[in-house]
Length: 179
Length: 194
Image 1 (cartoon, rainbow over the protein chains, first blue to last red):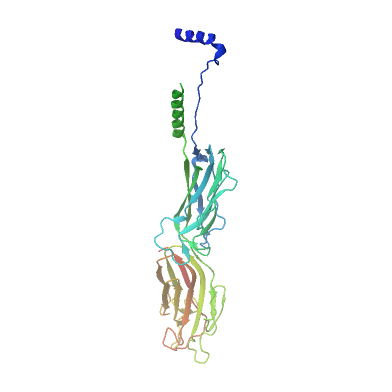
Image 2: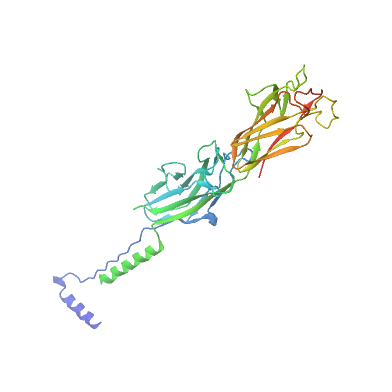
C-alpha cells in the first residue's frame, strides 16, 4: 500500500509529459456448441398400432395409425441438423422366408416436424432417403413432433402379414450440431 | 494480470462441454400384432370343369341327372368348387362328409328293395396351396367321416374342391340301378388350428 502511493505521486508530477496511467484487463469466455433432444411427453416412446390386419381377410388395415409423440425441451444453441431413421416392422417370431402370399415385415414412414421448415422424413421401404436430414441455420428451442404413417406390406400390397403377436420396428430421432 | 484471466476462460469452456453434447439420439419403438386368423368365403363354381352338374345355388350344388334314365345306373359327374380363403399361420384342413356318400332321402331311410342301390360313392380332391388330398366316401355306412390334413404353413388364395362321381358307382354293385328318391350329402371344409 505504501509503495503504490509513492508511485502515484510521481506520476502526478510527470503528468504533462505522459498519458494517464491505466491498466487493462481482457475478460474472455466461450460457450460450447450443444444440442439436446429433450424428453418425450409422458415418457411414452412406443407407437402402439394394435391389431394390424383385417381379421376377415388377413390383409393389412388401410388406416393404421398411432398418436404422434412430442419431444419437449429440445434445443440447439447453434446451427443444427435433425435426422430421422427407422427400421421396418418385423415379425419377431417369424422363421425363414414367408410363404407365398405373405410377408413378415411392414414398411412405413416416420417424420419429425417443428424443428425445420420441412420435416425430416424417412421411409423404410425407400432405397434413398433425401429428406431424412434437415438443417436449421439458427439456434432453436422448441417441441418436435414425431409421427409414423403409411404402413404397407414389404413386398407389395397384395401380401398379407404372417400371424405374429409381436411386430416391431425402431425409430431414432437425432438432433446434432451442424458443423 | 491477463494470464490468470485466460486460465479462467479455459475453465469455463471445459465446464460447458460437460453439460451439452454435439448430438443426441431419441429412440422410439413401433409395435403391432397380426392375430391368427382363418377365413373362407362363399363357394363359387369353377368354370370349365363342370360335368353333369347344374350351377351352384348358394352353397347347394345340384346334379343334373344322377341316374341314366334307361339303366338307372349312376351317371358320371364332376364339378370344381372354389373358395377364396386365407389362414395366416400353420393350420389344418378338415374335410367332412355328413353321410359318407350320396344317400337317398338325406336322413335315415328304409333299406331299398333287393337289386337296387340307395347310395352313391364319390370323391373329393382338395387343392389348397401346396396341400393336396383326396377324400373318398364309399357310401357303405351312413355316418360322418372326416379327414384332417395338415397345412404346415400360412396359405392364402383359392381352396378348390373337385367333386367326382364315377359312372356306375353305387353302394351295391357297379352299375346297380338306383332306387328313386332325392340323394344328398353335406360336404364341409374347415380351416382350424392344428
